[in-house]
Length: 155
Image 1 (cartoon, rainbow, N blue to C red):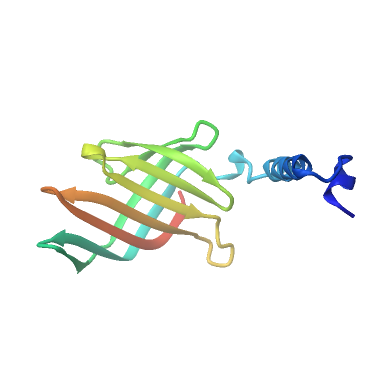
Image 2: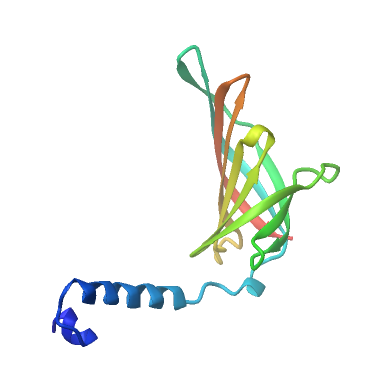
């Protein structure tokens, strides 16, 4: 059966566009996890990672130190959350980008640098959410970046 006969057209390019539109609509109708089913607060710990900086024309690798923080007041409908690095720290503002099987938490830090944490769906066997945290920054005009792997848990 041709695309045109399925869509009631003559099989031209416009039928392919209609089919693509239908498929996109079906994809958009696929339910993501309901926002109310996701935790409102998580604590993330990253024990492993790598850091690099750029100096004198080359990138240099360094070992990273363990990192942990909390993501609180997660509102997937409003696409907002709050970052707490320590109990005494001023909360940071996070933007949330929803994906299939993951949520991305984006923080814009001083001078426009970015931190991105991606938290994937819960691994039911492990009871934790696999996560990746990336930092893109700079010190005195030189690029500095790091990437960590770890897990988040419900609070």
